[in-house]
Image 1 (cartoon, one colour):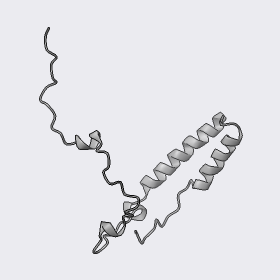
Image 2 (tube, rainbow, N blue to C red):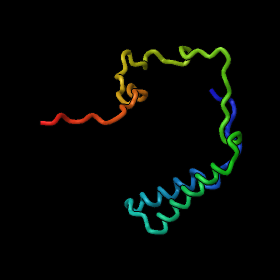
Image 3 (cartoon, helix red, strand yellow):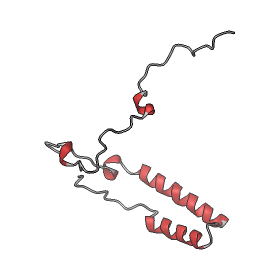
Length: 105
């Protein structure tokens, strides 16, 4: 849907992360302290690398003229009557001025 792509490469690649995960998995899922520190560093470097770049270099969205949602929906995979979630149904429900008090007995 989006014609462009991110033009820069991160300092820590997915290959680096996958290689470390493979070594840890091969060792029975028990990482060494060095591997834990390396994973933390990779996470820190990745997040800071993303935040260093201007938004226009990392994400681009363009409006699609005459977009119709129906053209993109597969009716065979649509749920006829989806379950209504309470957290989304009540997200804009007004708050009370004060909590409800239990009746005195």
